[in-house]
Image 1 (cartoon, rainbow, N blue to C red):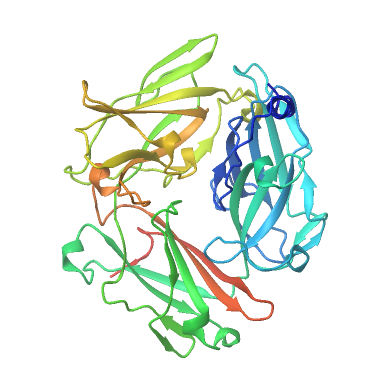
Image 2 (image 1 turned 135 degrees about the horizontal axis):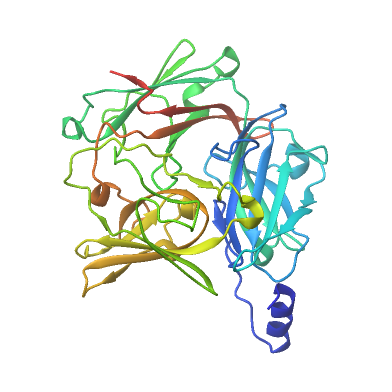
Length: 425
């Protein structure tokens, strides 16, 4: 049933529509939308970060499983460092139109079930960004009211003026973390332009891989030396070392690659069953190459991925005793790093296994299992995956400066680091 017809039927029979709550994060609100990607044009694995007043572009793409094409629209919302809408009006941070249509779409070919692939590149001559900071891309039908929103995506516009240096000491300040946690020692170098009230007005967000649930936000300097900000916290800035990501290759359904136990196909599509996973918590660290939790949407060489890439129900199985007062989630870019009902695993007491299922397009995927105690919102990767200082993690540092006139959080620095490339002390 199309969206317009569904809306008419509900209104005709007097049913009330439950208003959905839009959050300013990477989230899909429409069941027909799958495989939303937002990346710097030309590099699918890149973070959605562009430089202000440059020729950098972002490419948006997604698949819609509706029966007909729509004239989807989008707008851009400026946010503060905590991903809350800023007080700026759109005319203050946008030149040109405040909304645009997504006009490029293609019908899938030989895919079961069928879908429509949409793609768009921005900023462009019709919509230009004037200020740096955090931004939310909001895609919707008709108008941007919450009930019409299909999905939201975060992206960043940076003025590259601050420089960040990171190091990971072998011996952290808390000795019980030795050989387990990754303590981030940080220095930020700023030009004279930002020397006014640097401790009060300059903050840093540190993110590990693509996760937001364990991000360290609004980190303030403990001291200032000339144009150098120092961060000497008593216990240090510490992340779980974790472990290398698990992965599976689903670029082709013609063969079963490593970690895939079985591929079943019928008139409804494909079911991909992964080999049973086991806990790594008490096992020694093993160096395994991964893509730091990301996903690479790619089909076989003889297929055009965007319209010929097919979907499959992917079955995850984790052999593990039930963990009381906590849930286990699948986590990675394959589910937008979300800890929600769609990604929560169900426990089978008879087999003593956790099971989960995701609907995914052909490609290569990283993932991990995280444990979330009841009442908390951050996942613990160490319970299932283990905790190792040697783990190859990617860290992203975002430096914000609170501008007074107009008042907004200006993004003046962005740097990305890999733990095995960071200076080791």
